[in-house]
Image 1 (cartoon, rainbow, N blue to C red):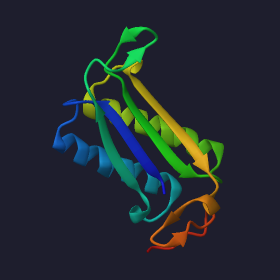
Image 2 (cartoon, rainbow, N blue to C red):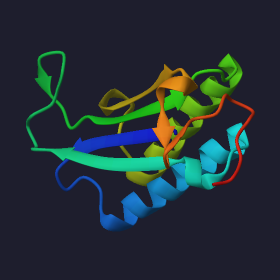
Image 3 (cartoon, rainbow, N blue to C red):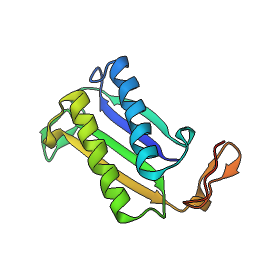
Image 4 (cartoon, helix red, strand yellow):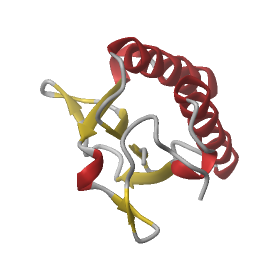
Length: 127
């Protein structure tokens, strides 16, 4: 936890861009939240070009959804969203109108990794 799902049109990101974005998502999350890097997961999904819309207009939408444990301060979440937005634009040049970044929170007791229920925020240990 967190799990970042980055969704873009086919061919939008190169392998090198995915590597950089995954590293940056890890750096951003661990810097803001002071947790071990191995807590951060990133998945890159693609969709066929022409299969995304803003309102009724075709758009090459890029979306990042971060599923995180509940319990973080609102200021941390705002810093996280802003840092992810800026980082993604810096690495892709995607426009404001074609980017969406959101966080979804779940209770730690409803997430499991490495065979262990996730700890409450502030009780993390390197695995």
